[in-house]
Length: 252
Image 1 (cartoon, rainbow, N blue to C red):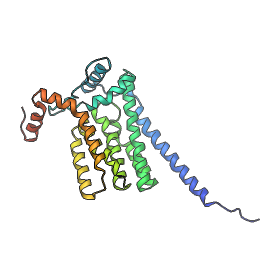
Image 2 (image 1 turned 180 degrees about the vertical axis):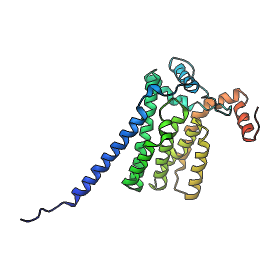
Image 3 (image 1 turned 120 degrees about the vertical axis):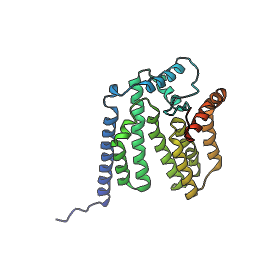
Image 4 (image 1 turned 90 degrees about the vertical axis):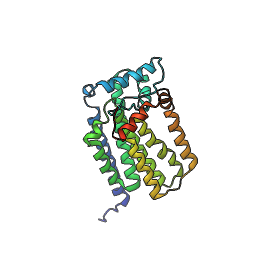
């Protein structure tokens, strides 16, 4: 009997299927870690203040002009609260809001897989996603109503945009490359280090930029910051003075 001819494409199809099954397994583990026992997630002063500020606007109050107070006595911009507001429009249940934030954390894992797969290969995407899905601090910072819990999804989006700009040669991606690190700064001041890194990468690699889209990203970030700047002007730039004192080694 003649041996049946084998189709080389069958092996590739099977390998691709197993890789997608592996991705589903990784996402399942990541989901279990992020969504389990959300009713036991800590809900202390910062979480309560953030929920109050978002709910006050949802219930007809004024748009917040500032976010939470940082550990060094400088008031954060209100972008974190703005990101919470749509969630509190959907539900006032803080456990459900925590679940939405956990969903964003899981989405960041999926985006990490996509970046790795698209630019470096399937195995790179799977390994990166698996590490992100199970990293303890990545899990901790994706389950509660806290500013830092929005940082992973924003930085993952920035990573995608940077790859699209530099490796994908898409000049319009600079819109997100400009906007997202500035958004992280408005969520948590650690974004200043991220912004410096982005500027360094752009200076070294010199990708082709569409300056109109760069200006657009800067403009959107500026609009988001306007309420905070107005509040600072009304308070004689108190937080700016406090930040300068902290950087200079002095405290009020």
